[in-house]
Structure formats: structure tokens, C-alpha cells
Image (cartoon, rainbow, N blue to C red):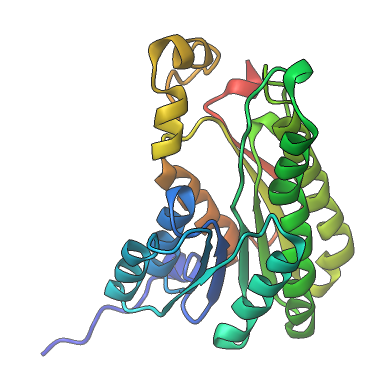
Length: 262
């Protein structure tokens, strides 16, 4: 019987063996795909979601890869719930190595038709929740002098999109929040970065952008000529979660097919 081949050095640099990752919005869409990708790289997963019943596929996929999976529920748009979920995530396995602030919403309306409720709901989930959750998770990272924080932002945090006033403002806030995390926490060996995707073809993305009259004008602005797939965001998360990216800190990684370069 032959021994298994030793792990090659480049694989070690991308390995998450022995790590624990906490993913908000982790039971569907990009978050669910990220849970599988990070588990495949060796991480145990804590996934937070809004609705009961979404978690079965995530748990099955993670455990099939030989990793542990815990699912938590809560509306992180409510401040107390965001704090509670973060504390329960930290307690699940005793620590968090990788925080992925992925949960988000978009309410698309012209600026003059946007309501205070639309604005407040968007800010609560997209910007306040990452702030509150990081506040709960970061002290343990500081104590361990190690941690990765990956905030899922958007190209809309860099450029303006028609009908996306609250969304653009919230994601621009995420980008600067990420830089403040870097300024304050880098000395504790914590890397905080943001990923800024273009349209990603999750089921929601398909519904919103799938019609040619809606998606066509957006596609025309992307030099690559296509939208993104969830696994492409998950692979970027893996890179930023791994030791391979230890020198990258405070960055906004554009995942936009060249949209913001054109």
C-alpha cells in the first residue's frame, strides 16, 4: 500500500486546514458556494442565514467534504440579532479564523422614489451588520494575532449605478470600513479586504439581470462581455482567506470583467 502523496508547497499556501470560517448569507447564493469552496480547502464552516430550510444543501456539501458545518439563523438587519449571531458563531467551535461578511440586499429604485425604509434597511444589512459582526469577532482574532476579514462589496461601491443610491452608498461605506479595519487591526496580523464583483449569476442575479433588455446594457459595459459566476467570487474569497494573500491588506479587489477599467 502506497502512502498518500505529500501536500505540495503551493497547496499549503492555499490550504485552510484547521481553520474555521464564518460566512453571513452563507445558506444561499454566493455564500453557499463559498462555504463549499472553503470547506474543500479544509475549513470548518459556520453559515448564517435568514430563513429556516435553506441550510440542508450547505450542511450536506460541507460534511461530504469531511468538514464540520453549523448553521445559525437570524435577521442581521436587526442590530441585536447581528450581535447575537456573531457571538453564537464564535462559540460554535471556540474561535473564528475567517470572517466573510457576505449577506446583502439591493432595493433598486430611482433616487427620487427611494424611501427612508429602503435606505435604512439597505444600510442596516449591507453596512451596519458587517461593522457589528466584526466588532464581535475581531477581539478573539486580536488575542490570537491572526485573522482574515473578507467583506463582500460591489463594483457599485466604486462607480454609480442608476437606481442604486442606497446600495452604492452602502457598498462605498463597506470599502472604507474595510480600510479602517486595516488601519486599526493590521498590527495584530489581521488582513481585512473587500471583494467588489459585477453582476453575479446567482438565482437572484438571474432574475434581476437575465432579461436581455435589462442585462444587455450592463453587459455592453463589461469588456469581458459576460457576468460572473458564484464560484468565481468564492475562489477570490479562498485566496484572501488563505496564507497566500497574507501581504494583501485594505484592498478592494475588483471582480468585474474590466467594467471599472473601461
